[in-house]
Image (cartoon, rainbow, N blue to C red; front, side, top):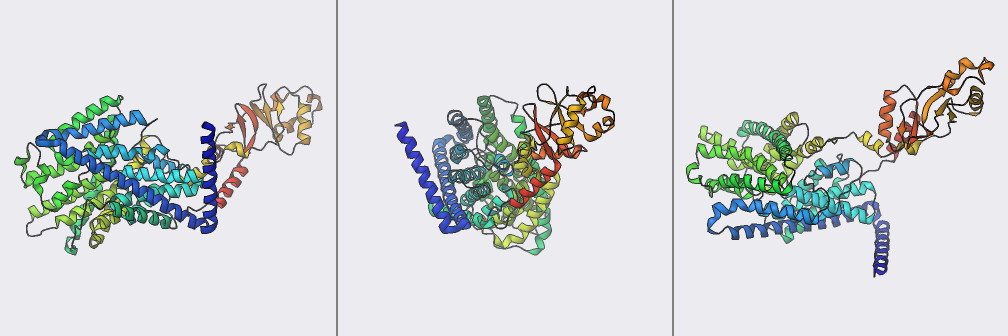
Length: 599
């Protein structure tokens, strides 16, 4: 039976290989990549539909479970979701379970673009349960991670090159965002701004095709979208207020980034996952009981303030009847902006699954609403459109948190039909991104990489040099001598060698020192010393050495610190040769010449 299964797998692999070769020849390289981008878009779109359907099913179950005790039972359901996520991870996931896009970004920048196969489905289950039962997080990061894993694993199955794997990874991530919002342009731009290590105009073609495919599939299978037409136009008289909103969005975005990192690190104090889940569940229960608008993605509460249903924000709170719609209500909305970061962090760090995308939209919507409502209350003669400021605020905070202004602008324009708000979106998104970068150097995902000790924005040259090992460039035509050899033996080697450096080895084969022609020259005219003086007497101290497993980046750093053109190389402590500065530079130029485009 095992032999037959291995045989079937072997023939299946051969069939895939033959089919792949046929398609490459028929479609050409670029046509083949476009076909793969469509396939990745379909798979990612289907994953997004599955995630939304699972989330809606959990929403329905939660509403049925609430019964007549809704104000007391509903706040506890997110805790149930968190515990179920912890159980799933413990039973079915091996190794660490990272919920951020940080690892995807690392995979694309470190030259592997390798996402574990388990990521193609696990986050659909955990985030669907967690967010569906009211966890204060979003579905966008999980589906982007899922789509990226789908793209990466499709490329691995078809054994494509690294560049194609990176491109398909980005296609999957962008397609996931596109399908979850039905926003193909924003999905492609998200992949370019967030997932790809560098922006590439040609890569937009397969990215757009994958995103469009996912959006069409999502629209066909799932038509329930959280937002509808929000805007009917704007007035240039209100530009100063949009500038103020841009500044506020930038400050709030920086707070969101730094707050997420700060609260996340505080949760690391608790090591036991069950204690984390219970502690997080208890804290969230109290917060959701008092401020139910912080529960879940928050899109329904954004729709409530868009429709003017202010009472829905505190509908199930014990203090809802005391809040009203005046100044106290405005203060509550401002409090929601500040606390959403904490509840999102508590949901994720205590064991739940989700992302910061939806919380950012919630924060942006209430930031814009608070500004517009404040102006309308202070200056009744100059009424601002609260709907417009809600929409533009969402775009501003997304742009600031992600450091991705194009994604923020086009996402809001697509999901709200707010292309008439494009100029305010440009103003707010650009200002927000600028201010956020000044305060928080990296976006929310790259900040996570920095906290973990990684390089948020590695130098492309260094990444290129990290791919090559020193052992691949070893020059071994240097003649080694022993510390116990006499000067006559050394001079014989000098006469036959084409090199002017001689490695001196100890009894174990390690580097004890080096001898250069300058070291030998003072002894040449005194033949009486040829049989008396030893190599040990004329050698120089051993310079720093490189290991064969070191990268060219490490070799480059060492060359910069030494006044030398060659450095000895060892393997397991034993000398194997030298690597030269010229050899490193030649290899770097070769890498530059052979560097391939993504598409």
